[in-house]
Image (cartoon, rainbow, N blue to C red):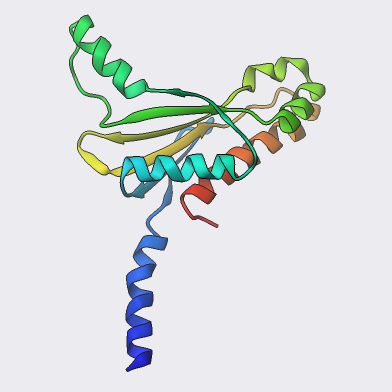
Length: 160
């Protein structure tokens, strides 16, 4: 009986663990989706950022802004259920990136977006812009930025 209960518990756990997936997106974007609650997924992203000793500098409430301004512009179509962008930076990673090429200041701060769509509020998307290197020295430095961003998202979504 104990083995049956253990197997049943494992079966209940598997769908939750496999719920997150990478979503097809243009090459300059990385996008993942998971089933869940927007606020819970957002909190998981916040924890994954702060686990690295980083601080969120700004939260942009993109969905609220579009909702508010859409009415003023006469285009009330609801684009998102909820949508926010978290901005943060890593002094160490940014320094190496900008030492490789000062123009890399354009990639700082880093941004991770979290959003839902009106037709499926329990499907939460999490993504970021993939830094596009301009040369060999920049490639290695920006790879570190992408590894940081992807690591945050994968930790938040419990992906390996």
